[in-house]
Image (tube, rainbow, N blue to C red; front, side, top):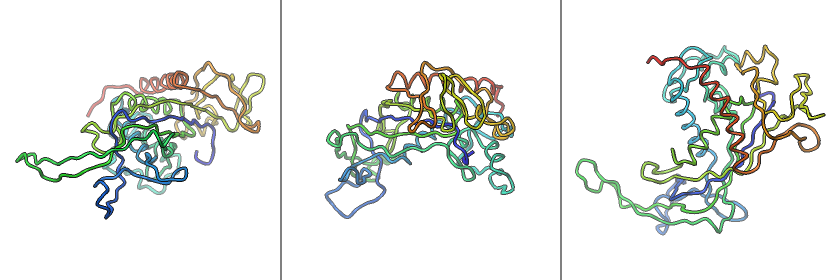
Length: 320
C-alpha cells in the first residue's frame, strides 16, 4: 500500500505546557553554568531554540494508542487477523521473522497499532513533525532542583541535581496519516483528546507532575490525491468509483475488492460531513478542510464512529 497514495489526513495542532515539561537533550556538557539536564535544542528561524522532537511525540502517541487498543481489545496475538489487538513491544512476533511472507500478509498479521505506526517489517503510516515555538519570545525556561531519595533509608541517594524545564509557550506541529481507515483516524483523535485531558504526558518525570500539555487543534485536511470533484461528486480517476462530495472516505473504498481483502480494509468505510470537497492546488486532487477546534473535533467525532464500529464488531469475552 505504500506504493500508492489514496488518501491522507494532515492534522495541524499546537502543544501548550500546562506546567513544567522537559524533553532531555541526552548530553551532558562541560559548562558548569548549565543545568545537569538540559532541554533539547536546535537551530530554528536563525537562532537556537528549544523544541519538541517529532520522535518523542510519536513515541508518546503510539504508547497511548496501544493502551487504548489493549483496553478494548487484546494484549497478545489472537492468531486471527480480524481481531483487534496491540502487540507486546518486549516480545518479538514469529511472523515478522518469516522472510517468505509478502507485504500484505505481514500487514494483515500485524496488530492494529503496528499497522498504523509500523514495526520491523512494515513501514509506518503516521509521520509527526517536530514541534517548534510559534513565538520564541513566549517560551519561558527555568531551572529546578531535585534529589533522588533512597526508598529504604529515606536519605539522599543521588543529588542534588538541577534540570531545565519549559513552563510556557506554544509549540506547533503536524501529524500526517496516509492510506488510513476511518477507525485509524478515530484512534488518533482519541489519543489527542486524552493528551489534552492530561491522561498521559510528554517527556521526563511524568509521574512527578511534569509533561502535562494542552492540545490546541488548529486545522485538519483530508485529501484524495487521485480524485477530482465534478458536479458535486468526487470521482476517482482510476475508475474506482464516484461518491458525494461531502463524504469522509477511508482507504478501503478506493481499492479493488481483491486488494482490499488482502490488506483487510473495510469496504464501506465512509462517513458524511457538513463540508463540501474542493479541488487541491493546480486543480488535481480533492480535499476537505476543517478549521479550528470545533470543526476538527467534529471530524474526529465522525471518525470515532468508525472506530466504535470496529471495536463492537470485534467484541467477544476475553479469555486470558
